[in-house]
Image (cartoon, rainbow, N blue to C red; front, side):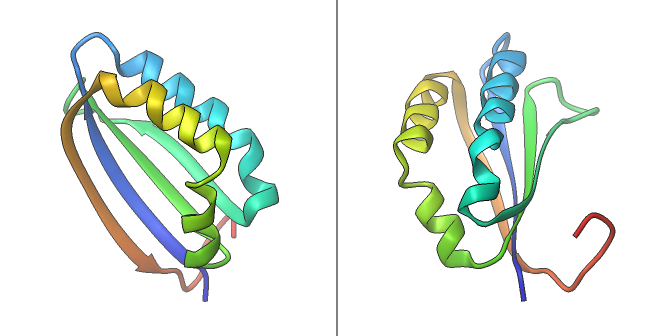
Length: 99
């Protein structure tokens, strides 16, 4: 079954749109790495929170994707704009629209 991941990150005030744009740009390479779904969302109840929802063929492909040069660059670029509060949830995906 596919591997799912949902995470949130608190962004320092004034940097939400910049971080969201970086995350969206990063999605261009993901299909070749095994990603089936990658969605960046802005919280409606908190202006400083971004949610990312992902579905991968396997957890191993997800983990490997974080080691690419592009991912490391994105992480290095966004880390100074994060406020430090991160959440994550790993999931087993059973199906749904868009998969």
